[in-house]
Image 1 (cartoon, rainbow, N blue to C red):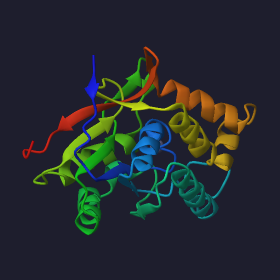
Image 2: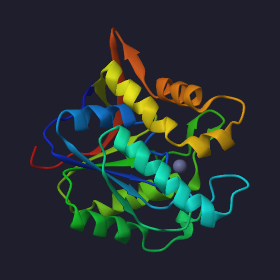
Image 3: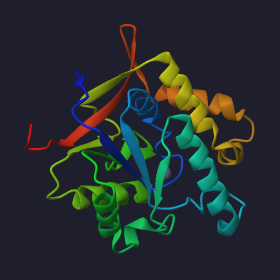
Length: 222
Ligand SMILES: [Zn+2]
């Protein structure tokens, strides 16, 4: 049983490790928020430069940044902050929490969403070290800030109801990672991959579609 996601906020900062991380779980909720006039900023620790097999990082980094900009625009997000840290090595990168803190200083948010910090998404589905590291660093960076903090992963406490239009926007958003997805699975069309992933990230309750989030901490002003 989950409760409705809070609405008493104006600016959400979504902090992730790689391009495509926002699209793998929460893009439909982001589409609803921006549609309703809320502001959302994506903070990306890396350009995902090691994420395309067979492509050198110098080529993959800029390509993935461009795919991420297009993906974000599909759900109404036009501000992306790149921390330019090394892909696949976040757990051994010093200063990660400070870098997130600086982003929050420059663009104050009243809601912060991090990626899932648990060891596995489900049985036999281990989480990546980069995701755990950025999640932990985000929690460290928000210490002392009076903001909502949520995580996007298994074990939801809250839900955002999304419309079919929001779900379609989320599918278009993930499908913007065209080269990335085409290399990841060369046999399934990109659009079909995106549809399958987005539908997996949504639960259906009665006639509603919902995106789940896990509360980490609430602001004391509430
Ligand atoms: Zn990732």
